[in-house]
Image (cartoon, rainbow, N blue to C red):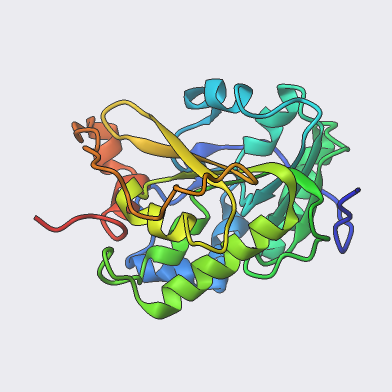
Length: 265
């Protein structure tokens, strides 16, 4: 089955990390405002959340075949789709809620000759694609935005849970019967597992970590691979120690992380 996006577009220039807000907005709640992203993407050419591709490329290569059809949620102005393309993965569809991000990404990709990559404006809470049409769905930091006003990470607000489950429902629906969902996130396993492993889903869950002093989680959910005895509770798990470098302490990733999924002592 071919996954056809609901529209068409054009594309954008080179990325320049110097043209970005290095410390982010005054409040993490601003990340929930679509106007913030339109304004930010209007002036910012490139920002890479949660490390660049080189830090988890080995995990991508061991889990995604070059023949796979891939859907990226919340592409923003990241270079993830370009890196996947350069690694031989050509059937890529990117979505973003921001029309500004979509237009600029379309322009950038066309300028680099990546004509096969499709970029469309869409909401990850309501994916406009047919069922069972992607081999892989991937998101990198996009779902984390939903958690900025979650409250207690052990007992997140119902509004947050509803949005997260709407996203996961859509991802599960558009994945082929043996497809995989890759989520690259700050979210620790004991907070993510109850959501990922809701009984309605038939995928299994595993994860890896990457990063230097600052560890990020690379979740792999394999549709159709859930064991009957696989439950939503997390096994005993000791998270990697956080021993951060100065550039990590000063970056937007750190400021973002302090607002989501952080255990109180």
